[in-house]
Length: 113
Length: 112
Image 1 (cartoon, rainbow over the protein chains, first blue to last red):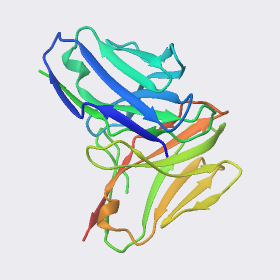
Image 2: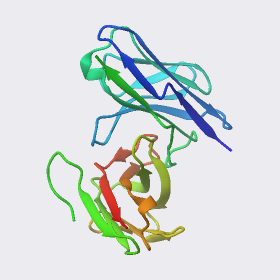
Image 3: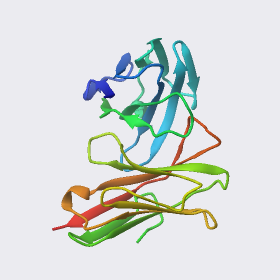
Image 4: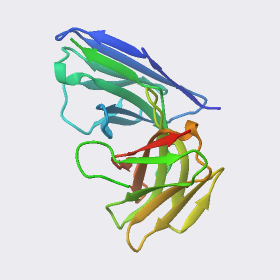
């Protein structure tokens, strides 16, 4: 069966520090991969998605970037974190065809001090 | 019922009652719909989906109804349990898109 792993579960970082969040998927090949951010009590904001290695689409101008160095690995990064980057970051995968459900990891709670 | 504003709409029910969570979708071209359940501190979990060629689909204790005429989607949970307490999101896809559009979510609170 397919599984998705995100780490770390929680992270506290100072303003101006770099960020690297990692997500890996097991049990499937060539998945579509997604990064979302969720503010407290709010819906899901799509940040990036990828349909293949090295292919990244950005949905919203951000202080963030994403990379997909391997088929089942998706990384969210920042060179310098801002206070506004605080939030709950979720990685998800779906099979590589349209009209399929997404499957989410358990998220990373990021707090910027 | 639902409320307008920055806070999530909230539905409070008693354990054992049936719950109905509603969602109005925006695009008449949407042809695939999904319901997710998100427990506190966790990622959304897929519950059930329905395609536009259907009006109703049933799972274990859950039923999704689709009314394309008024662009309305609902999730019915039978014999609601405290473990059903969570935020429920609907999502719509159109034309085989990889990117769903999520609703704002409804908080379901089940009182024992």
